[in-house]
Image 1 (cartoon, rainbow, N blue to C red):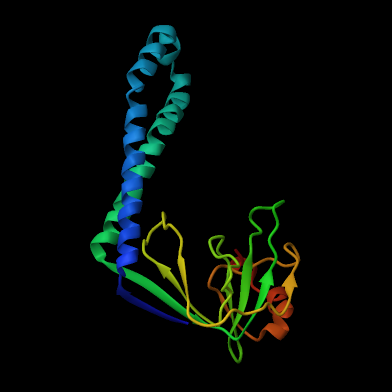
Image 2: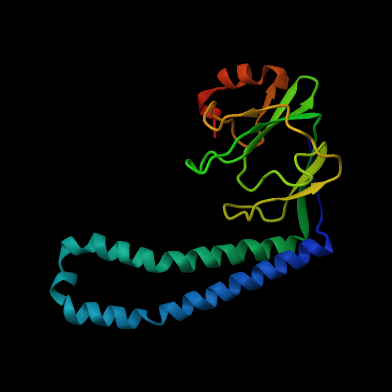
Amino acid sequence: MDETARPQTSAEKRYLRALRARARRALRKVLRLYSLIPLVVGFLFFTQAGWIWQKSSLPALALLAAMFLAPLVFVLVRIRYIDAAIASGMARDLRIRASAVVLFEDTKIKPALHQAFALQTGPDETLFLNDPAIKISAQFPNTDFSLVSLIDGPLDTGVAIVKRGTKLKPLRTLPPDAFQRPAHLSRAKGSLENLETILDEWPRDQLA
């Protein structure tokens, strides 16, 4: 597993610009929604004036204010991270080479149990991919691929997968709730032949 920083491609730059345009449209919609705030405040003042000035109403007012502000803060922070990614002009490329894979089956009953993968990345090394954005496709899982991230931070938009090798057929598929899953990009000593033992012995504080 090799991680490098490289210049963004033209396609990645276009993607970020489109992402910023969508975020700015979302900001305009939120601001239009906020134009209703004076009406809401006026309604509360004239119909609930006595309640508003009671100390017991302060938690409810604080919660109401937070609900109004949350969408604005979310969109503004998102735009900030996208602008930072555009300004940096760099992408994070995590290249992974694998010889075999075991699939953790997903289930619609428990959304947290999405598809996950255990990859044989060395003679005695197993790598776990446990990200809901990473799914089986026509060419994934793959013997040689990169996870490309453009935006760092808590509002990461996920990863793009660049495939270079050939598709891997899972050696086997584990039931969705048979084992607890290690955190994304965790590594373990051992091969996929002993995967069940690795999972049984995995530290509880390092599970996803």
